[in-house]
Length: 102
Image (cartoon, rainbow, N blue to C red; front, side):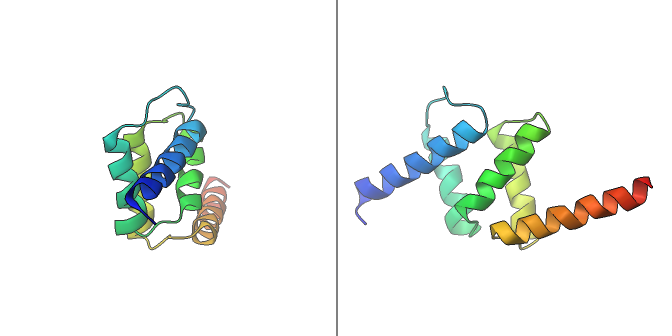
């Protein structure tokens, strides 16, 4: 894949993230592109994991890229690299929260 095609693919992915975060009128910046490259190449996170993190941020009413990055870093540190990993983790966490509040 050439440089321009790779850049366009990253831009498309960042647009999806902005849309899922409720920031559809926000412009793509080099900083957002760099963050996306870090998440997917350095931390090895699937794009679907990033979209799940977007949902979590919106659900908690904190839809900033900084909060998104904090959440993604935590998941990467926990080894939650795929959609299935994250869903399993969230289900266990939800179950633990129910047990604590019961």
